[in-house]
Amino acid sequence: MTSAATAPAMLAARSRSATRATAAAFVSVGAASASWTSRIPQIRASLHLSPAQVGVVLLAIAVGSLVSLPCGGVIVHRYTSRRTVAAMAVLLGGGLSIACVGYHAGIAAVIVGFFLVGFAVGAWNVAMNVQGAIVERHLGRAVMSRFHAGYSIGTVGGAVIGAVAVLLKVPVTVHLLGVAVLTAGLVPWAVRGFVADTDAPATDAARSDAGGVRSRLLARWTEPRTLLIGLFVLAIGFAEGSGYDWINIAFIDSYHVPAAVGTLGLATFLAAMTAGRWFGPTVLDRYGRVAVLRGLALSAFTGLLLFIFSPAAALAFLGVTLWGLGASLGFPVGMSAAADDPSAAAARVSVVASMAYCSFLCGPPLIGLLGDHVTVLRALVVVAGLAAVSAGIAGAVRPLPYTRLDNPTTDR
Image (cartoon, helix red, strand yellow):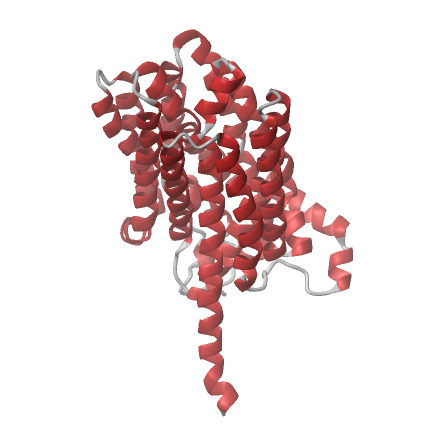
């Protein structure tokens, strides 16, 4: 009797612990990512980089992620989401250390370090989104966008600390080395509360079936719905990724504001994304995925045009607010849509995340190369066009009828 009575309480406690641990994973990777992003102008100035060369540096991160993302499902399946996040936190800390110490010697060390950072972030993203989908099912309600709000909270915190570091003239190496040590030291401890992965193998026999696992993962690349979700997240991902990478530089170069104000422009964008993700579940429950994401994509389109063509920096801040709000739910809802079917969550999240990160691969060099000819600010017109495309294909994320959270065991 005692065991039966305490079982629900124990399950609830495990769910709360897993929720906190998953939130910590999202917040931590967001803070680490915004930390190095906030110091890009200083790294650029120290190395005397052109916009195209900055794009190459950012490309190293995207390439690292694209190498790890297609393997993310296999890695999570074999080692579990908890171990994957813990290992990637250590790798991210190492890569960030190489970049922030080595940039004094030249661009090569930055590229190597950022490649490792990108690899770590890619696998980390797959693992934490898989765990987020599992926690959603444990809780019986949609909370994925709240986890991504945690990511945005982390990015806001990282950007604000970066702005303070710039104002106080804290050296880039001191700032980012501190971030690296904290990430590698605290995240493995923080994610101990993850629950078991439904897609993770429980036996040695399952672990040895590597060929079968790879075949099942590759099969997900032929599913029309999965690919269309990936295309949607890729298109809206340009709006999110270009905001992280180029807002502060666009403010500084085209609106002629101080570096600290440019970083605050980035923080404004990230704050808008955070608000959208935090309040997203309520709006999604009321209006549904498709209508909400279509409206937000149009908000991103409008905000980008306002930012690009604004006659004054003050109005451009309104533009980045609409831009950030519009880009807020595309990635998290895309991940939830990919994970609608629990039996294939890791594989489909890996596919969608891999496609989405193509925007981070193509975006930095594209904007950088165009920026050499028409300025970074005007190059963002391409991003506005892709936001409009994402509005047109938002129907791809419509929930599967057999994976409703209030009846998760319903058959196809």
